Amino acid sequence: MTGAWTLAQAEPAQLDTVLPLVCAYHEFEHISLDAATRRRAVAELLGDARRGTLWLIHHDEELAGYVAICPGYSIEFAGFDAFVDEFFLLPAHRGHGGGRAVLEQVKDAARALGIRALHLEVARDNARARALYADCGFAARERYVLMSAHLES
Image (tube, rainbow, N blue to C red; front, side, top):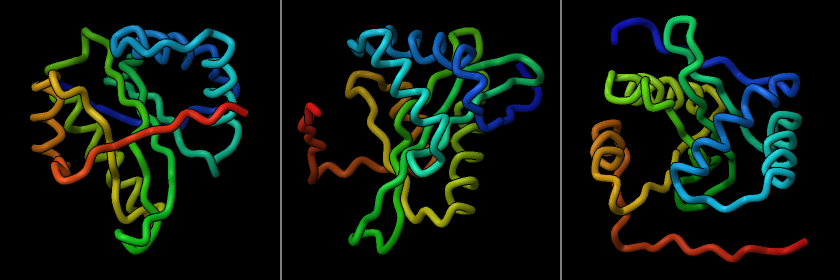
């Protein structure tokens, strides 16, 4: 599958285009989130650039997936950093170089935003994705374990 891989920043009006992709990703990763909470979280991201950026991924003219980055600040990395919060390609678009092309574009966009480091999570048993991320310059920080505390509001 050759052709151009492009990113287009999703706008609030595209919420109903983004949501089925997010739902498919959550099903793939076994992420349990009710539809109303998912809708609210995505709508907040699309409506406020301070929260992050979500791009729709196109392969030529066809919608192929999405990728979202969410910013933070790191003393260790001496500036702004961001997490690749979610990255999903539809099954028909996997294994054709799109992941690599998208990640390079995301890294370029992050640099342009003044982001000094990108982080991501990947399932330990997803060897294919781990290899892709390593080839794109992401390195496991084996000394550290990401831990999370869910804070109810």
